[in-house]
Image 1 (tube, rainbow over the protein chains, first blue to last red):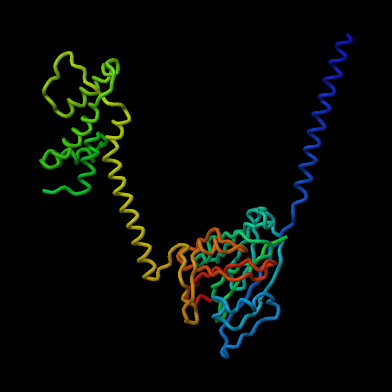
Image 2: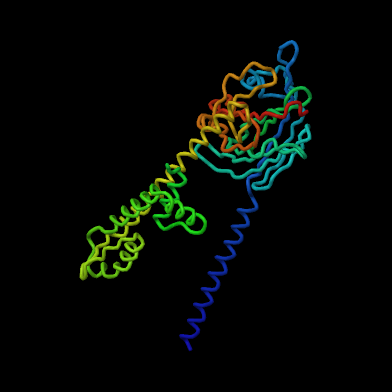
Length: 170
Length: 205
């Protein structure tokens, strides 16, 4: 009789321990999943033209571009105008669609965020498609430091070209 | 009559017993009408059998292998009967396999070399003709003339850039260039970025 109650108490303890461990795991997992680092993508659409005078005319909102105008392929243009700049939340694995002024659609997907000694790295995929036209950019995958912009240029638009500036970060 | 490369490949396959159907009929008919083809097949079969008839097999294994050797000899049309009580020896299986793989490996090698040469030719001719290869890294023509100063490859960009690394680009039938540029808006001065330049349709917009 005594032995049976001892066993019963032991079994009850085991059940408690297992239940507590399971609950702890669920709660812990939920915490971890509910608090992902929020990431964003900033998309800037820049219209570049070749001015008659040759003097560089820079939209004051293009904070980072002046230093690049001496670099290829920016050096070919002298007038830079910001057409649009927007910041969107970017969830991992969920594509973000953005309508470009020329009618094409840019799709950005955050594939992964990895960490290295130098800090986090954002693995991003970009695609540009246009209805009824040849695919412009089927696939571009880059790995970038936080808020380090990369550019996709070449789309003809209104006598010039478009530069899309993309920067992903927290 | 000289045999073509295709004929040689088929004869090799026939000698290895790998042909069937139409190809087999074609090869056998070639053997029937061409002494040269016959020589090739016989030479190949003989080399295989010579390898088979190696050394180093125990009598127990040789007894089991007799049937195979007999079949091969019969297929070769070798009429002289082996003396009674003589044990034919068959070499170890790996050598047989190696000998049998020889012609096939040579054929595969020739095929791979031709494929590589064709790939190099197609790539270079496409570039020269200004056709747009998939994810190619070419100097952009630009709208303003004034040729580009540089057009680094994707690999170079990926290696050199610490800020942004291009992992993959695919833009079918369009010319693609990658320009590495100094850090644009980054916190680190050493980082660099990239401009992916894709040629648009002329007068598209």
